[in-house]
Amino acid sequence: MAYDNKNPYQRVNDGVYDSYLNSAIMLPTMFNMVGQVNIPSQFENNVFNNTETVQKALFLDITLVNNTTINNGNTLVGVNDNSFTLNTKVVLSLFKNWNKIQFEGTNVNNLTITLKDNNNTTIRTINNGEDLTNYNITDDEIKIAVTFTGSCTITNIKLQVNTRKLDNNSGVELSSSQISGLSHWQSQIEEDIENIVVNTNSIGDNSVTTSKIANGTIIDEDISSSANINLSKIADDNIQTLASKKDDILTVNQYGFKNTNLMLTVLKWRSISVSQLQNSFTIVNVLPIAPKNVIGLWSENARQTSDRALINTGANWYVSNNNKDVSFRIYQDSIHTFAWDFFMLSTK
Image (cartoon, rainbow, N blue to C red):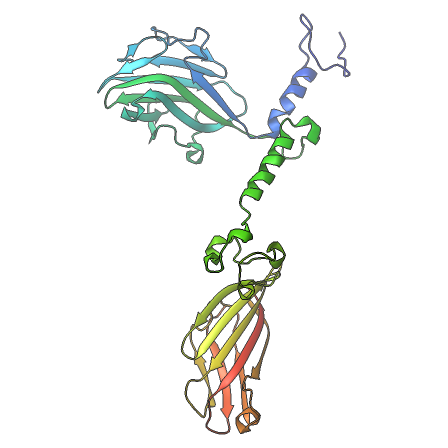
């Protein structure tokens, strides 16, 4: 019988061709999957055997041995110091490691679970239902030794394994119409987003804080004319306050721009007493956020009067990459209050 490459389906009494098998194997080699077995419900007879014989459940061979609990077939009932062991063998060519072992029932916290290899050497003691993936237990044959520290009734045991992906080159292509429930996911996501939008009509002037807003800004187009919000509290659409700092003389504000890594730093120096600064000096830890790469620095006199202090005063500053310290060079020709604005454009 020749292989029909137009019909990949196998019929009763047809030969099992390797081409059929390879097509079936191809799909699981593209995914990392989690396989789960529930016992005793997935044993052929749906109960635990009373004899220490191998029982098959999907891709696992399991033998209940050294059991001192009461075996009711569909439950294992034990008290303090009772115990049993599940000798478990994975019959799966793509087995990678163990994912989870979970006992269900009543008082399952009264169980101590120890994993041993085929030579009875302890691998580790685990918590019930914990994620075992990071432990990378790759033994395809393990012994699950269970000891009771109190009364407990086990009604179900979940055994999960991870499979390994062989093929990183091939892919699976599905159209949206082939994925059941996709439209429901989309509508549910849209509904969830709508539920977190703040209704500005019902927010009072003093009740809006940046901690209540995801990115610390309110977009002015989202606020209707009837909203009771002071417009001075609304940030520009494209600029966000990243950090600020203030002391008696220096005020620092640092701003970020949406969709860029640029940062604008504005430092305002406002003296509270007269001075005549004529030197260079460094002040440490001035900036809340250190610039990653400084692009440009500039400054300007902030005095509003046309006096000698405005004309015969000069100042500039310097900031190093990845540094919060600031160096100033200031010259005052006469004694007066010093008011100067310093600006820096950098990446953050």
